Length: 122
Image (cartoon, rainbow, N blue to C red):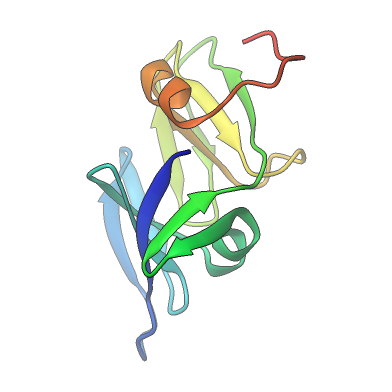
């Protein structure tokens, strides 16, 4: 089980932007600030609530399914917060089958965080 530390951005704010994954990301009031093994980023409120479950105070685990594919060439993928740049061989990952919320990660990180479905060819 992979867990993260997370806190909801419960502030009276119009949001903020930050640079991550080779592009500008946007966070809004109500989104979640996540620390995933030292890697900090934000997740859209609705997506976080659909795909994470609370383990204890401030500790959550991802319980939702993801869809992933290995990138054949470099590119960028859109998430609800911005874009993530990736390289050939990285995994492009989505929270939903219709590919509306994506991100990318190196193979080692993907295999550390996710269990493969037995029907998978990854």
